Length: 294
Figure 1 (cartoon, rainbow, N blue to C red):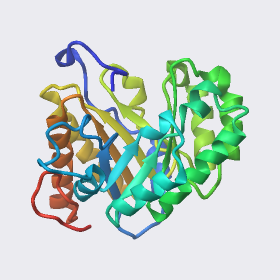
Figure 2: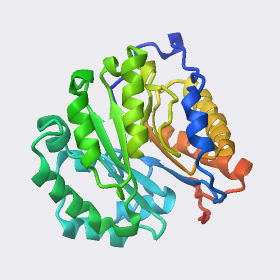
Figure 3: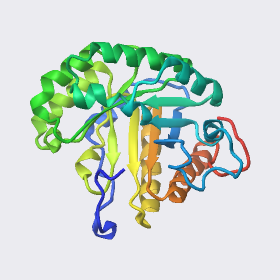
Figure 4: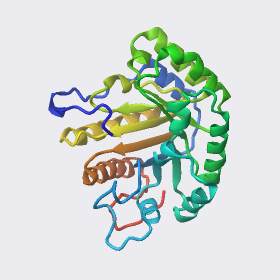
């Protein structure tokens, strides 16, 4: 992911900001004694994107991927709405506990800009419904030129979104976070409708590391910088997720983006191993020969 890329990672302040005061309030109201559901994965499963990840002779990439990770941030849906038969095939080939997190197609988010898109949205809903119980949170990403001047359109779209389909929203225009009034209006909208406020941890856009949750889950997109600091950043995220776990978070969705595929696997494995050791979970560690069940 090139968005937020910097030329000199060593010169950046990569520390996680303190939580916004709303975060603890939102989490404290969740009132759940159930174990926190944790989903960790990559944006794609194709061999061309995960070079060196698959053992020689792997014939079905999805089947192997879903034995190593329990989730996928499915960016493929951004480029097209897939026929139900293809989605059914993915459902059949993936592990029983695997979860798909499809991205809203660009036809809806970028070309139609959330307006006059009822037919396309219906086609998308029909398609992803074939993930059945393996369907996770849907991810809506708006580009840089979609700013606060589009608040009414965003609000109408979110108010029309099905209440039984979890949604996470990423807004990249800096105007959403430039003043407290705009940010408060945005977060009030997301909190009212139970929509997750995506946190995008990339070194070139620290305003998107807002640490302001709007429901009892987090949707984190972590972009590595191919730098030694990536390990410290992952460790800091484990500490923050542990804090949120103590405060009552119900679901953690964490997706690692990295241009060096070997580092992507290493960073994911490091986070999972820390969770397993400290939280007494048994998530599969990518690259491990031992299959463990959560």
